[in-house]
Length: 545
Image (cartoon, rainbow, N blue to C red; front, side, top):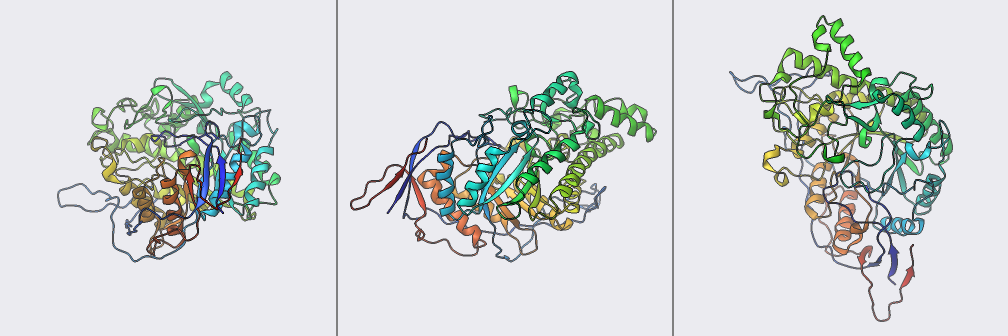
């Protein structure tokens, strides 16, 4: 018998790196049937070795008359370790509606049934601060999430929950808008310096500035206290599921839930790929921090402002005095500023994760933190786009080892994006190297002893993208992936060819990518997005609205 389901998700912009999809706008027929996979996914190994330290990395000699440089992405041959990598699937961003109820529950139920049949480990959902605490400080509404947890449990799946302290909306493909809680926005309207600000004075409402982390600016509580109270409320509401159904808590630490500054805001066309972005350190709290440090170092002039020659959002490194090949980034002043800018971000992550560790310790749930895969201009000396985002990663210094060390101190998994990307797919003028970046992050987590998990940055369904994830997922040297989360549940995932690729991918990840993929789907778990009529085949249809 083929089980035909009527499902509901939506189309996604292929350029969407965050892919925020709703459960509206699609009603399609899906059914389980036996089909042949269309491809084989092959795995190769990649790793790198580097000698690094927290504040200043050791430098490699690359030539007698050349400056010493870190060679990011050195690779070597290693045999496979064959460890299983569980696969999760991200749910639509509006899985819980703004009213607090579960959105399209019948469609979601059908989707979870299908994912379970494919061998998927579980799903990921955003627990939006702007939804749960929107009615007032410490007034939490978890009811929609409670319904979701029970549904996930019913299907024998696991759940990753993101503590999403950022705004939803304002990035490419965002089809729903979930701002910060109204009461928090009221405080921001009274004091605009509560949010990140660029050199021209643009305010970014995506996330509260780290500059006021320890100040009681949110109705008498500090932002860190607000986040801690929120996580504690979640723990109390779902204590019976933590460690069993809810196996991971991803702690949001910045825009898009990532530990970074909002240096490349896509709303209103402010930034376009592959622009270098801008430093976000011009709210009064961050400026005060910079000024105090400069004065303490006896360099008062260095604290008056951020770099004056760092250009604008959509420029290229060589267009600026700061980021060009031998620019200000590589001077004593540049090193002072970048140390401070990246150090503030590390301190911010440390404060939030200290709170999260205190809340969730002993629950059995893992903690994770997300780091952005900023791969454009990676081949340049300055790595400009990474610098503006707060990652002090240049030709001479590793920016990811300090992050990995900070995370591992709290027992937190580093979740990294762009695992599906290949260098050859990127535009030449953007100087991208996602493969080199992933190798560098794998090396950093190995050196720090941190666990590494991954996501795809763009919505992809082709065998090449899945194959690239398999390539980066494994290593016998101890820096393979502990889990992978696929972006994102939507209509296209259930198209026949796309579903075949997902099923093959999940199977290969479960086998460590060691074995040749089967020529047919013996488990009969593939789905067709069409109505299938077969003689003597009785179909059971569930109408999803």
